[in-house]
Image 1 (cartoon, rainbow, N blue to C red):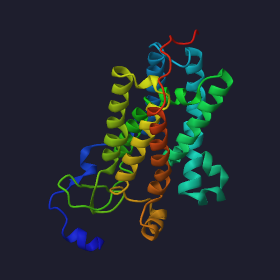
Image 2 (image 1 turned 45 degrees about the vertical axis):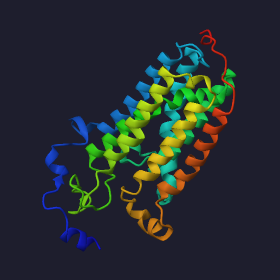
Image 3 (image 1 turned 180 degrees about the horizontal axis):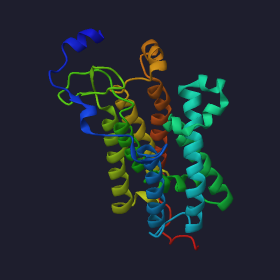
Image 4 (image 1 turned 60 degrees about the vertical axis):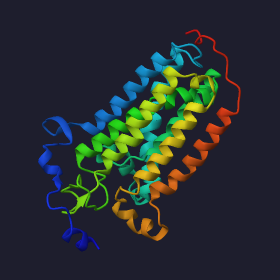
Length: 286
């Protein structure tokens, strides 16, 4: 099948290596400041800045001190949850050498694990500060797509997580894969899971009264992210060690893990739309 695709591939595909990209901004000796690290940092800093701005608008469910706590615990949740989720869902053999789980610089993070880590952080801060968990989730959800956008762009710059073989005009050859033209699925994910959701949620927050419907923003985020991820997985090449799983089940691991997201997102969105709006009071005092 692959040889047939190669024989009928487009005559002049785009070669990733000709784009002049590299996975790091600069290097000093053996140290490299990698774009993937900058993507995580940029996503967290944007979320903190935007959240601090959002809670100054009427109706905020938290104060700045809560945003500061969420910044700290949320960052831990993303990193620890993302890494543990990768080891649990995508590469369980990594547990044979537990030290490898801590080697974040070797790559390997799970969106679903990071999501669970952030939810745990929100639950902790909400319980300690006596905040409405779902309303805090609404405010956090608006900024999360920026991290997805930056992360997927970093994947593209790294030349990793490429798509399935294809003959579309914009197909790209990734040297770390093979010589087959493939979907640049990292860019699809950056567009749908990142940019599109960021624009939709930002507009809903700042131009409508969506923030007064408890759970609506996080419901739309979860539903939208689930649909976007499920769709994009049709174009993304499954991880090498999970290819047989995808062929046997008909869906990739990412798609199976995304189905619960879609159901939860749909349920939370319906819940939010059938409940009364919350009050329009001012933010909590700092």
